[in-house]
Length: 154
Image 1 (cartoon, rainbow, N blue to C red):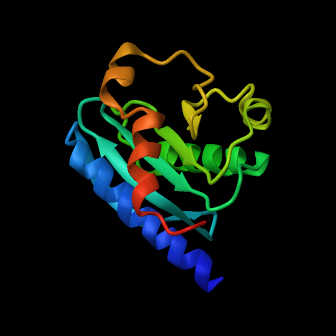
Image 2: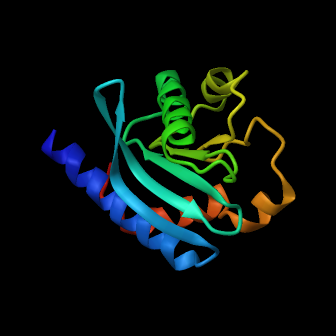
């Protein structure tokens, strides 16, 4: 458990620094952002607000290979942010799930039918991405390239 927390902290520090350095409209909202849903507590790894897109961006970091239940967790977080945090004039929240390893087919099946804008590692978003989103958010390749050099051996 202690090793997992160390890896999580390293990932969180690095991805936060990377996204903030992009300067393309990201505003850092919180790390381990607390949500209260029906009296239960949940914690989002990283929460940003994108000023140009006018939406929240939830980033979930996993130190394990992708599992289908991660898509459900991310979908839950997007729904909770949309219901409890976003303003009426904000756009729907975007989710990004970064995993240690990827299995494209498993991720595709897990995200099939999900209506919210979500991406898993280097997989394509399953929904048509608006042009403004494609040019404003970092690509998965950029994120992965930035993460690789400083991460502890996972």
